[in-house]
Length: 418
Image 1 (spheres, helix red, strand yellow):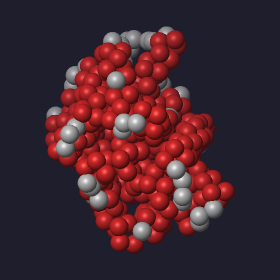
Image 2 (tube, one colour; image 1 turned 180 degrees about the vertical axis):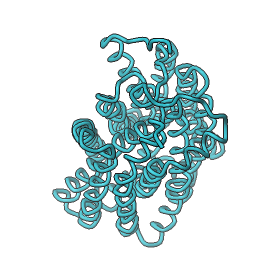
Image 3 (cartoon, rainbow, N blue to C red; image 1 turned 30 degrees about the vertical axis):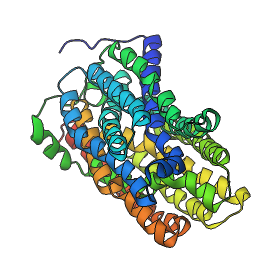
């Protein structure tokens, strides 16, 4: 076997920074629409359920193209595919601001989903292959820090640009433009070599559908995917509907709501992602299901935090409580994805992430936003948030079971032991 090329620590830091910034823009471009609920509903005469369909349009593109991108990423240069994806979603974000009717807006959201599918499918595999398993958890935690930071930026761009420019369309232009440059930087990155766990596992390629069918037999992988699906049933409605909830049911102004949600995401993301990297890599010395264990604990702790946050009107209570819940969920994101990276061979990571994207979005958030909107129109957002939070019990349960299956699955699927 040819010797694997080595990258300098400086180049690894640069590559991680570029991929991180792509993930940052991934979530900023995705979330800016959620900060514009009042403006978009007014401009296009939408009700809450129809506004939720904007997320479903995004999810449809995301979900349908993820398996195809995963297949390509397993066989061709990942950096070029990733660059094309960033370019597509950035242009589509700009196109959202140019839309003059519902059809154009829904099409733009669909194309954003198509492009952004490449970020979660390819981004983590690049990071996992750049870095050894000894520091992989921390590297992926930094990559997934793009979620809270980018999401925060999306809310702030939507709220502040609209407020100070007087045009909600400008928010899409500001959010989408930087991605055109980032796409070029990604295309210029060196392609890291693909490897099995620690470079020692089986590296054979299995064609097409057979690859995905083989992954379905990995119990730990499937449990982690189901956990994510249950979690996004509450996460996506929080991301999509919180701005209006803060305005209408907690008496905040547009800017106050955007800043509050932005601070919750920023602080929760920094703390949660930081803890995920540090605690996960420490626990991994004791158990190969460390990241699943960490995610299960965090999902369980998020539930009471959200119950407190959505059941009280005092800002001194509900904002810190939602912050604790957000911290727990942001801790889970890098944890579950590191567990995925560790439980499948390196040559199948892109397809594993693609399978995760397809299943968790199909089961978790394809219908969640419009269904949440429909129920909230009848019973109110507060009660709907409280009921939906209960899905975190199922997410935690799946993770705890995955802790028990991880050792056996890593030996079987990654190390090739009987």
